[in-house]
Length: 163
Image 1 (cartoon, rainbow, N blue to C red):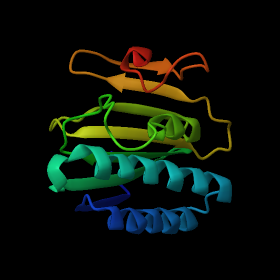
Image 2 (image 1 turned 45 degrees about the horizontal axis):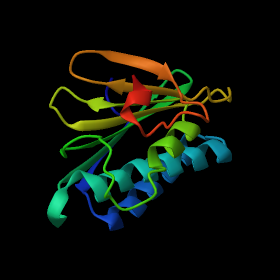
Image 3 (image 1 turned 90 degrees about the vertical axis):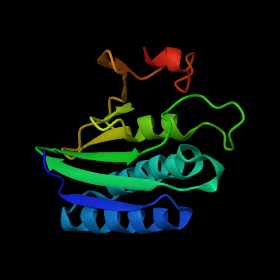
């Protein structure tokens, strides 16, 4: 599917605001509900912040690619980077709440690698007004699958919870 909007910027914190504004404009053009637009912008901001903070070590930022595709009653947003992938980092800054927050705001979220081995967070938002069902997905090189979001007793940041 060809993207309806595509951005490629250096992974700098300053560029996250630019991406948020672009999604605000896209939401206005699509006449997206205000609450849904707020959810989209927050989820995209969190995914982009993860790239800025975690993808490129030693302060050498690489690319931050974001694309949006409008489908039948859904918006799919993909955030990509060329970093080392999604893995737990006990010594990393932050509280580790970004991915669970993204999952709570989206219809589904998938973590994995694209055909060029770039790290990818793929978020789907329902445009039909249907409630979120919060599905987690995790892709690896052998198997792509979708699983239900972790319950309160599970830690959704734990890779074992994604299998």
